[in-house]
Length: 306
Length: 306
Image (cartoon, each protein chain N blue to C red):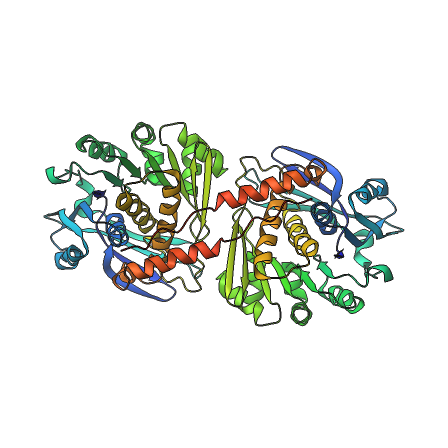
């Protein structure tokens, strides 16, 4: 089924305890696409400057990513520069240059307007609403946001909640949005405002899916080497949405599988700089990792306690 | 099978955002026993002062806890006073009065020396070693410790590791002990020093069991109301050890079940002050919660990605 992502396409410069890189592929739509295309074709809408290495982006075409919706404009590309602490637990943003992304006002090409599954990467919620106005009849819309919008565009964000199916955010964002430090109550707060599903990501620990009467937990994959945490959340979203799109199935059990595909993609993302790990893997590695997740939590229920 | 715990028996005064209590039952051996006795008889060795409400402790007898190894000495009981932050994420110790616990030198009564399963609660590792010298031939020994001993008695602690089967500690303790911030590498470090199993607890997130070639993860139970986190770790240990003892089974699959029983007991512990929740529940509630854990992580592996 068709899967559309609208989000940032950026050049990231990252310092980790293990090394650094400069102007590498980054941005929510880029991580999302790299993960999702392992499972399902992807349509991307975004904007870059005339300094962007379009040939690098176009390499994704052979993997089923339609990048024709990434507009190239006069000006600089969105650049982000960050530095992680020795334990990768914290990161400082050293520089953010929005460039042409500052005026991003996504126009969805006609050929993408029938998209059945839609992911709204972290941009101004007013623009996210604008995207939804251009999509005809999506089967499922998922959305990310960040503290900046929770603080500066709270009312618009709450309007947006009424129009999406899945809100996919970090625990700290869920806490700030709901004003409640308990993530399960925070999820309840979110469900009361529109979404049928809240996915709350807990970084190195895992992620939880909360529906009205169900909770599912997927731990983070046990990695002895985490190289660069950038993009884990968007890769998670890519795995989640692509599993839903490829199966065209939004049943509770398939949303659980989608969580596991998401966690698998998040774990690949952090194993190398930028999107590098996705260049090395294919369906076999994804299948193998999903099976490892099944093993990670496998136990049988004992005969009753007497 | 016989199950022995050696640890603190204390009077806790706790302030949480939801209320406070004074001189309530506390201590590692007390939480451990309350949880474990739901599954298997327990033998306790500890020390209290002559101010201790022995009748409260003796109520445990009817639940299969042998408290005859809790010695009452002249002096004050161990008292701990703590205050939790509004989100229960942090706690400050307001007061610690060791009383008779300062000179605790556990002597294991003859009738307990054939104990098959042994839990060494968090006390001086030199005393933990002394306990092991008095036990004839345990089938499995698990042990807790804390940052204080990691810093002040590191060499003794490392000697102790050679003589135990399961080290059960918090993630921050695993990091400090190993000098490695990655908990899976920290677990590997621990396994290289003796234990066959490292159980690393991650508080509100869950707990991980690491063996030489296997990892198992159990999330924390999704609670919308956490009342008092005190004793969660020792209750976890009680559930874990009692499941192993009642089944007399240290197979990998049963250690996984033990993790789930541990997580279930930890989740009960935090639902009320002190050990109060354990006074309300029986085998039926434990079985039900274990089944909820199975549901919490349940997913089927998809047909292969193609």
